[in-house]
Length: 425
Ligand SMILES: *Cc1c(COP(=O)(O)O)cnc(C)c1O
Image (tube, rainbow, N blue to C red; front, top):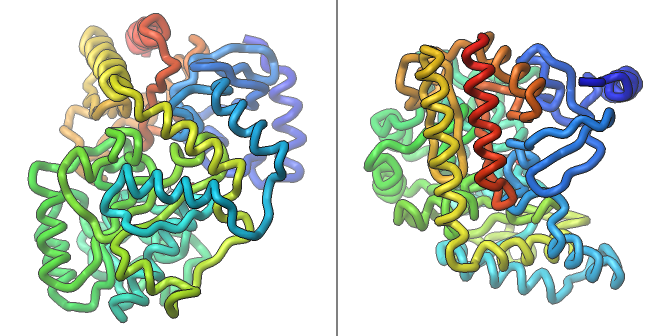
């Protein structure tokens, strides 16, 4: 596999961009590899700067549920682009986007568009604090909600009530108001919320950022009951799960109504867009109606709205999620069988088109159990798969995403590659 051009670009990149990348996991450092510099994408495939082709199991970390360079998305962007790309004044397409989101997510009675998932979660939390007049927020260990200060907190084991900054540069004050609880642990949430100081519990209803971890039976309903009882808002961070696990997200799949919801990734159709929304009485606290300030120069960008509306329109077709889920099931079963054949202990967590293979004999139900994984073995697996022409998320603690562009044949190739690679490591 030739890599000369990629290496030359990486050398240049390192001189002007910290680590050579604009988002840290892209660097592939945790798997002992160099970043893959992508030249182009087409359907389920990407081609790197040296002309090597890979089956892409990242899909830009979730957004590309239709695959790369989908013709209808490109057409929608081009059509909008000819009329201008941004105005800083409202447009009808933003209203159509808001109506479409509300129709798909009835809990989101009113919505506001932003440009990234980070902005959505950060704004939702500010709103929850403004609405409740409380400062504290509960998040789960291993839960990721973008890179705002208050979410970059990972408490050490047993220190659930004592916020410890998970990043340099996060002030103690921001960390102090963040309470970290284990995923799937309702008692810890009850204890935190009983203080009546918690503005919001923010949760990935299907955790995707410690690798894929599913909510235990009754967990989400438990969160709903506890937060209601204590006057705390429940925020579903469905930046990954929205339009991914089901058209209506995890809230439709599990039948739980959160107070606020954050969507991102898929809703931008591959362009920068995200959205937060929820109960109208809460959303009306936002400026210009209310005292909670939130704004954005490119919020509701017409190109992103056009791309997002198009992807949602395609996803609404009958049979879409049956197809996606069936493909995800096939991949998960194939990977589990490949690990078993190679006698490698593995847990394949999966729901619909999201799949994580953890290299551990321990069932993975939270971050602590996720961390029992053999990450060195994952690194070897990643490198072997890349050599075999399959590009996986470069971390044990991420999910693979199957798109509608992945054919049965593509997935068979991924499974065959996994069989060979796992037998060799
Ligand atoms: C990706 C992600 C975010 C952050 O979104 P960005 O667009 O990267 O800022 C927030 N929450 C979850 C659950 C995510 O997966």
